Image (cartoon, rainbow, N blue to C red; front, side, top):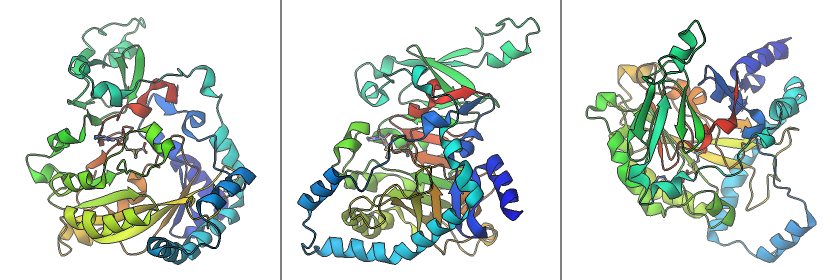
Length: 408
Ligand code: SAM
């Protein structure tokens, strides 16, 4: 009976609290859909079709070559292994809870694979904003915001009246674009259509322009800052997806300046590499002024509920780290008395999206965000927009391409 109620709430919200614990299973598609009124994400375009198989004979052979089974671990590898052993029971327990949620497991394959495959609708070549934004053509690129859609609906004859006044041409790069409408807005750029959620704002630029988003008055700053940096990791697959930056560049991200004067919760995605973990904990977080650092974990599963890979596979762990912390907060202030404080690690479980897409965090972190409501939220290095949020990066329209959406 209880599971049926939790299921009902999951189908509406996209969040399933496993066994009333601190472990949640989420459907990122349902969470992202909260941003839209006329459109919704296509699950078949969102979810990954391919999961690394940890047991193919070829891979086993390759791994053996990389690191002979009995070769002693170096110092960094020993630290990484110790860290893994510490978090292992928490992750196993979280996964066990998912496997006990029989109703959820039953519908999971349908949630992930529902809807007609978009394959035939999908344009094979998508706009490469990273390349275009760094070319000589960037200052000449303009995007058309089709605000006229609302007029169109109001017209009793169903004619496209008022559409010309509703079309607005704005520079696409190095320019803050804000969607004022309470409804989804379609935008056109070079024969492609993009779906922009209501009250979203974005800046498509290189790192050098990010300071444009610092509010003149810090009381207008952000209460939640999500950061998913393009870490260098040497993998060819990653390099093919987007350009990366050396670690020292991230020291200059103006995290403190972006934060609200009441303080901000900072959520930083990091990979499993020990060298990166050392840099982040010893150099980066202190440089940004982050305190109360608490790790959360994102555990990745296949549509049948099994882990996407062997939990103990050294270089391909089926989980990622989300480091949370506070910046600019005064723990004695009134606004900090009303929120949940970071203490315990939590586990977020989901089926991963294609193209290394991270799950949306706004709703999951809501209770930890300092300051007034609605919170002001920003994502740095974003590839998508969220209603009410600010998104910055060199390709924040990447996943807004209309081919990722269906009409409601
Ligand atoms: N969180 C995103 C998601 O779930 O889709 C993924 C972000 S990805 C790890 C990093 C992003 O940073 C990529 O879109 C990449 O193109 C962008 N990026 C790389 N170098 C950049 C730079 N110099 N300035 C701005 N963005 C940059």
